[in-house]
Length: 357
Image (cartoon, rainbow, N blue to C red; front, side, top):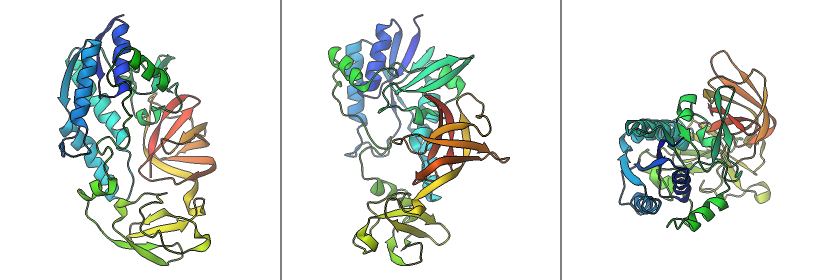
């Protein structure tokens, strides 16, 4: 049945086609452009103005209203503040996961409901399916674009008010639909990187908010190779930008960040992509969130990924009494990073996940 649906229009082709398909299906569609960052709106890396221009052009072609709403205050309180706290603690957070749970499917959803919407829609590559009275979050049909990883913290209440119109479509088909409909952004390049950082140099951005706290760069054997600028500016598995590129070592292999010693303020580095310190067969995680509202069965077999662009790995999950999860992989997992999310799957169904501790 036709409904009033508010679509998050970002200026990109995915959300544009999502709105177009809903309009063609007979729904009353309203576009909503979210402004989530305004600290440096005139910066060369900030594309907010062009994004709004593109979203308005799309709305005009489709024939829908467009409203712009500013969620910058909510974003700073709920997402960016947590982002900085995690980095200061030596972890590497994933703000896009938190942005979806707190802004796109919370602040945005609440605003859309006030506008009289029955549901909201986005251009995410994921699918929804009802089974047994509950909604399941499934991977997108386009495996190279699947975004279920970023949506794993959504609840049944949020999903019940959500539509994902392009989840069952391949990216090339999305662009074809956009081009045939004459959408002006049909060939627009996909955005990359963290939502509020965009294409800007990450270290320079972080340095504006976190102090530099230099310390030694050490090998596991205790040899100092150099000086780092602050543990917050590095992540597990990092190869470029460590600052010891010319340092000699066995076999001439590249150096990788393997550990952070917070007490000694030391960055531990190793040589070789497959060094034992970069491989883990198990991890612990906290702050779990489950799509169904219930944790998976104790000791159940699943697959999991600890990074977005990563193939699934077979694993067994157990829960401890203090609410922590233990995930044991069949094969060693590379560069498991505290602060990132471990997301569990049962086939194509995303079960939820937790924050790696």
